Image 1 (tube, rainbow, N blue to C red):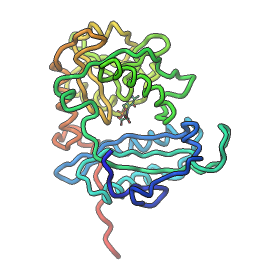
Image 2 (cartoon, helix red, strand yellow; image 1 turned 120 degrees about the horizontal axis):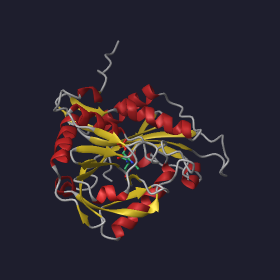
Image 3 (cartoon, rainbow, N blue to C red; image 1 turned 180 degrees about the horizontal axis):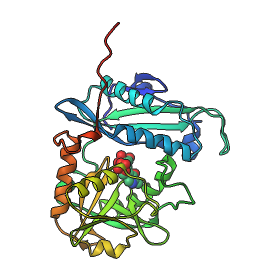
Length: 309
Ligand code: PPE
């Protein structure tokens, strides 16, 4: 991780090196935290944060599902984001808000610990590599099942849930693949370790519906809207692994991964990025970089600097 100057922590900008926590922090022991991944992009009008409001709203929703109360409103978290972006002065960056049960009592049941909140920012290039963005990646269906809805609420982007993703991507990487795809306990396609999934078959886009233990992906929603606006049909429905093997095109989407083509699944060749994937990838990148007016409503800009009274 490339270090930057400041991290926003519980209401203050602190030096990167000082943003530390105690080893007795509840979240370290039990994964009792929620987080977000957001990207800011350089545009002609300065840095723009993509769908900032929705990301901060999802952070609050995630916290609610874990019975954690974030002591800052969505608006306060948005203002804090702009403070970090301004302090670090990066034209584009990845942003990582995190809220977690802090230091106080240990024991799973501990309820009165403070909820600490931090927002980091640092430069993060292509999640699955530049070459992956261009040529597509190789993925493997994981032997690890996606955490089910009655195990941990999957709509919560909770830190502890990511052990599931970590095992899946680790297994895939050790076997020589770039990324994993997780299935539900019933054998339906859920998502990647850190991405939502799309399939193209006979010109129609398919993506698992929200009952498949997936995160309510903001990029997934973005891509559905972009695809529909471009005249494509998008169907949200349960999908099985043969749908992957027989697909014309497969791609993954996420804040970090953006739109990454898949060229092989379980050694079945899908092929080089197809026309729909390329079209959606281009439209997505044009949108987030502020090169397209069509979906400009999703870009949020720093509020004008307050003038001194
Ligand atoms: N599924 C999972 C499991 C997931 O972690 C992400 C985001 C998505 C789907 C896509 O969600 P969205 O970003 O709202 O479109 N993964 C984040 C963290 C990756 C990491 O390694 O850390 C991200 O993309 O920021």
